Amino acid sequence: MSLNVAIQMDHISAVNIDADSTFVLALEARNRGHTLWHYLVSDLSFEDGVVRALAQPLEVRREKGNHFTLGTAKMLDLSTMDVVLMRQDPPFDMAYITATHLLEHIHPKTLVVNDPANVRNAPEKLFVAKFPGLMPPTLITCSMADVKTFRAKHEDIIVKPLFGNGGAGVFHIPPADENLGALLEMFTAMSREPVIVQKYLPEIRKGDKRIILIDGEPAGAINRIPPEGDARANMHAGGKALKSELNAREQAICAEIGPVLREQGLIFVGIDVIGDWLTEINVTSPTGLQEIDRYDDANLEGRIWDAVERRYAATRQA
Image 1: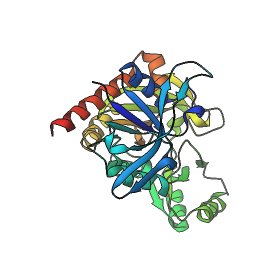
Image 2: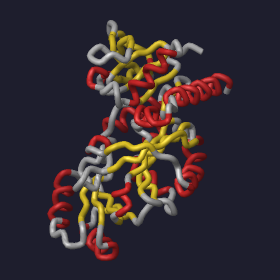
Image 3: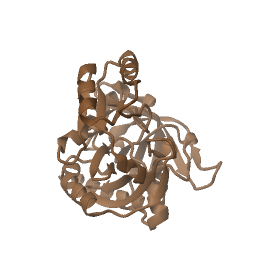
Image 4: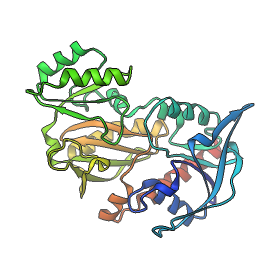
């Protein structure tokens, strides 16, 4: 099977080829003989019912400083592509949401991965709320009074922006911290969106586990250890990745959410688990493939393309 694949991403010149998941997905696609195109979300447009992107032919190779070649830009009708990988990084803002609306016009005739409508309906911190038995005590609100009541109940809390990413804007507020009011005022001044407040999980010191699910099935995991003096284990925030396997609780979490992910066309998903609790379901631009591959020799990108090709073949038969 040879596919025409357009990758909607941030510019490939900026990727770290030793860590970026989109890069290894592109490498795997090249190795399978797929034709690659590269475009930015800002190159996306819609006119007279046609979704277009100013895209460039893409070649990739694992050579530092020489990892890509882009050809002459061409205006593509994305409905002529077989697959579009939606891989631009969050924030999950109105620009991101608009892109999902536009790509919904071509899906599933052109298979968009992940399904754009369900990406739009599954913001990472809100999607977890569909599984209340799996998430830690959580409050989503604009009310300072509600936050203070939640803190009085749980004492040690985490406050973070509802649509943030990469560990940015995540604050650990212990019981004696006097900065909660000022912090909430800052969030309110910056955005009209609610904040998300959760009970602090001391298990974070043992790690925040990133588990990759492919078409609803757990495929591998790493344990991300936060740096000294920080409550964030995200790799962008300095977290250290260690080899890991799934325990019984994590397998149960995957068994509960997996069928929902598969039904909604969320083929490549990364979930975050701290202790016994599911804290995020990442469907926009999950990361972690290369770190897991290095520990487990897993070739997760190959398994993702197997799933994409199966899903593509199924849409041709429908």
